[in-house]
Image (tube, rainbow, N blue to C red):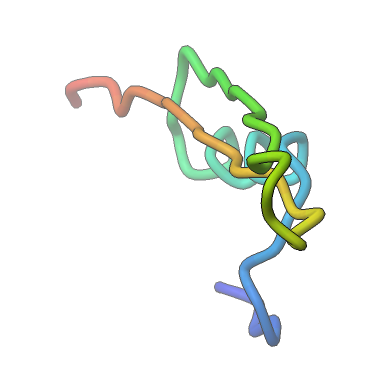
Length: 54
């Protein structure tokens, strides 16, 4: 079951929990700050996970 949310704006730990729940391993994340010259305060979150062979 996938919960409906209005926007996929989750914290890295929340993404990690979801990936773990669906069987992914080696979950990593990197938070990249927005460029200083922009008005955006939202960082970019890069997630990496591996789905093991079954």
